[in-house]
Length: 102
Image: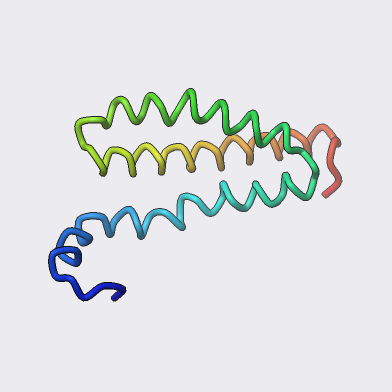
């Protein structure tokens, strides 16, 4: 829809699955970014970025290296998924220990 170049339109079709998955997977990551900004817990966000970058993104990128650009997309989606999970688990921990009022 954005371009009229047929070569680009054909090439883009193989990446549509990533475009469809991105908002579904990344939603929780960005949702909890907003929650933690509101809670003024930037340290937790930084720690989540470092942990997920080192423990998820770089290993996944290395594993999917042979898939080239699609491997980069897969590693990024895994990174965003695990950031959302880690921030969600930390938020649940904060709620259960009474360190944040809900």
